[in-house]
Length: 88
Picture 1 (cartoon, rainbow, N blue to C red):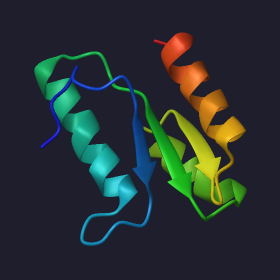
Picture 2 (cartoon, one colour; picture 1 turned 180 degrees about the vertical axis):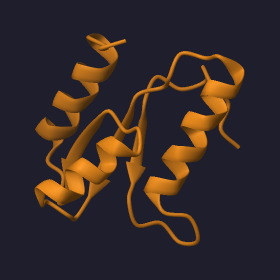
Picture 3 (cartoon, rainbow, N blue to C red; picture 1 turned 120 degrees about the vertical axis):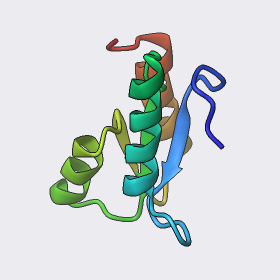
Picture 4 (cartoon, helix red, strand yellow; picture 1 turned 90 degrees about the vertical axis):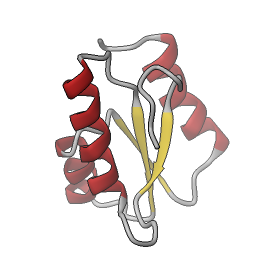
């Protein structure tokens, strides 16, 4: 179970069995809001590279987006943007 404040960032796979990345993110955000915690940066990792895919992820509460196959530079950019220079 997710515990707010335990992680610096989350790399969220969008196509997980049983509970997809969108619903998982919504549940994490609801829990953070319930507890009044600072949101943990969530970075979507998905094979969907369309603009609509990115918009769905951001609308669900994710902070950034990396397309698969993910390159190390893309993951590093997203992590640095969210952890080293957070928007919060």
